[in-house]
Image (cartoon, rainbow, N blue to C red; front, side):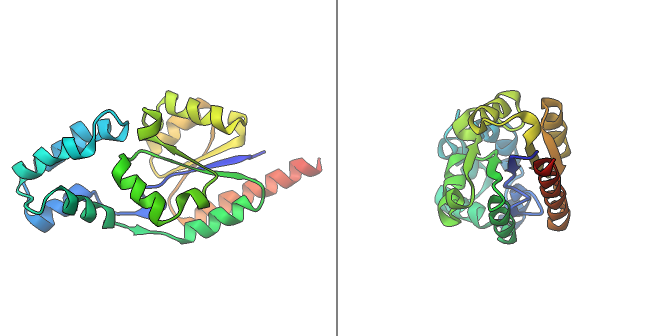
Length: 203
């Protein structure tokens, strides 16, 4: 019986379609050195080890971004589109008594903006944020923290993500999984799980 569903943020709720680094390089004709930040320092920003402003600012100067850190972050926050239809799916799922949580790898400044702007604390029963946990999804430590706070069995958690490697890790950990490709497939999975729940309730 499914008691909790874990939703991803990037490419599930926030649809970007391409890497922000590719977009910003092309728009401002920047040096590709900016990609080094996203490869080296950004993972440490996402786990709260480094402060994004301190880690990113030197790259902006070297790469030719003349507008400064705040403008860069503003462009980053505006990159992509929120799929608000997902919020309707989440609300409908919560009404069935299923816990809905968000699990995401993000740095604090950008994610804090989205939490406030889109009322994510209202949409989700719980937020699992890599920069607060100190580990990246799907590291075992991240999943164990999530499992402990949800207080439900592994087999009662449906883990949704668009990355196959994350799905594989979650499955190995013992969670039920759904590889997210589109909303219709997600709806079908949720309907199947809801039907399964009803069957078990009536048995």
